[in-house]
Structure formats: structure tokens, C-alpha cells
Amino acid sequence: MMRNTIFDLPPRGVQARRLNVSDWPLKRPALRLPPLHGFTLVELLVVITIIGIMLALTLPGVMASRESARRMACLNNLTQIGMALANYEAAQESLPSGTIDAEGPVRNIPQGYKMSWLVQILPYLDEKVLFDQIDFSVGAYNEKNARGRAINVPTFVCPSCGICRITPPAPGSDGQWSSSNKSRAGAGTWTASNYAGCQNGVETPIDSDNDGVLFLNSKVRRDDATDGAAHTIFVGEKLIGLHDLGWMSGTRATLRNTGTPPNQTPGDSSSLPVAAKPADDDPDATKPDAEMNDLFVGGFGSCHPDVCNYLFGDGRTDSITNSIDPDVLRKLGDRAGGELIEGGPTRGDWW
Image (tube, rainbow, N blue to C red; front, side, top):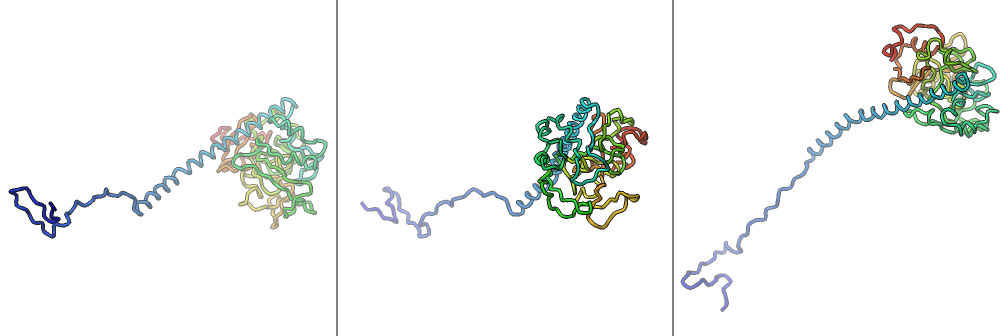
């Protein structure tokens, strides 16, 4: 029996119901999708802003902790240098000469013998191999020592400054440094040091009559620091600036004094122009040109924010603020001045 597509035959006794047109096709329940969740553009911008604020708050702390670690590593370098000086004195009965040369004053030009005190303590810094490569029959600038000059000694490098390789310019015909940066014949690349010995308490050329502990042909013992080794600066940090001759050179490259405030040496920073310091009766006179008098020595300085690290005669290392009283700093550089430091030798008065 065929079935009607509109009407289905109901069972017997049941009346058939006619479907309305509106009932066809049969309605089905609508498919309901789950709601979609996501960020609006405003919400995304707010999240990015919050992340930026959090980074701005945390990064200075991270950077400060890293700088603190670098400063501690720098102090450790000074400690190693202090131990090397002590061992040298125990073996040679005196501290090393700040620089070795025939006569003074020492000029900051690549001429003469001028072996630095850093060269002399190499065997006591586990650098005997490098020490043996140096030819002491010739000077620091001789071609035979070119290879040694180019070698980096990690103990001589402050982590905050990094390794500095330099190509020194040739001295001008008048004895002054030439403003050109042409490398001297046979000079090659030299490696500089961030540490310098204290040669005097005031600004004066490097000579054999300085009142520091490391100067021209010096043979100072620790006991000669009659002001007290604990109150006498032996070594400090320095910035590597214009006309630096490297760690092998016994010039202002490895010797400084306390007569110039920290980070105030002309030529040691891009923020400080080179100022000529003529060695005459007017040490404060300057010239308008870009030449630096080769007798000028300069003071200490560092890449650390607001402080400079020093090694004292008793082996102590400390970070001293750059705002230290200049008169106090000057007294700390004189080994036998017999001067009193106002307030007494307490750390709070200096730092």
C-alpha cells in the first residue's frame, strides 16, 4: 500500500490530522555554539602597559646587582695585585719600582726603557709564561716586546670597563703628542690597564723624588709608609683615555696621583676635554689646542657609578666615593707626610 506524503494513515479508529503548510518542513531546534572568549584591543594595551611598568621597576634592580658583582670582581683584582706586591716585597726586600728608566722626569711618550711595575709583578700573578716572553734587555716599546704588549692580562682589567686595545699615536716633532691617530711604526696594538700605582700626593711629573710608593726607580718598603700602610693608597683604578701607552709602559698609563679628584683627569673621559698642563710655575694654565703636556700625570678614576676602588698598604681594598674631600684624598696618597686626617681614620669620614 502506498503512503501519502502528506497524510499518514492513522490506526483504525483514529481520525487523521491534516498538516498545515506552515508546519512543513518541520522546525528543528537551533544549534547553540558556546560563547567565544578573547582580549579586546583595549585590554591588550592595558596588559602591555602593565608588563612595561613591571620591567621598568625590575630592570634597575637587576642592573644594579650586576654592577655590584662587577665591582666586587674589580676589588678582587686589586686584592690579587696587593698579594703580588706583598710577595714581591718578601722576595726582593722592597716594592717594585713604579717605572725603570735612566733619568726623569718621565714623559708620556713611547721612548726610553720605562718598564712598569705591573711587568715586575707578573710572576706573582701566575703570569710567569708572559713574564718569560718579555725581553728586559730592551725597553717597553721595542719591537721585541710587541707580542707581550698585545697580550691581555685579566687581572689588569676592570669588568665594568672591559678589555681596551689601543693603537698609540706617534709623538709630534715638538715632543708633544700628535693629534692624529696614525699608529707608530712597529707599535701594533697594545692592551691597557685599569689599575695604576700611586706616585705622589699632588699633581707632579713622575720622578725619583715623588712621595707616593711607586715612582721612578723607587725602592720603597711597606715600612716606609710612616703615615701607616692602612692609611696610604698603593694602587687605584684609572680610566683608559687619550694617549694611554698600555700596561707595560711605566708612564701615566700605570702611575697616577691623588692630586686630581677622581674621574676629573682631562682626556680620561669623553665628557672631559683634553687640557694641556704645562710643567711650569702655573700648573693650572691650559692651552686651547687638543694637546696634552707629556709630563702631566693625572688622577684615578673608574667606570663604577659614584665610586672608585683602591688598594691600601695593609692589603685592604675599598670603594671610596668620588665626592671625597680632595684634601683627604691628597693625604692618602702621601706615604710619609705626617698629616692628620680630620675626624680620624674612620671609614665613615672618607666614604
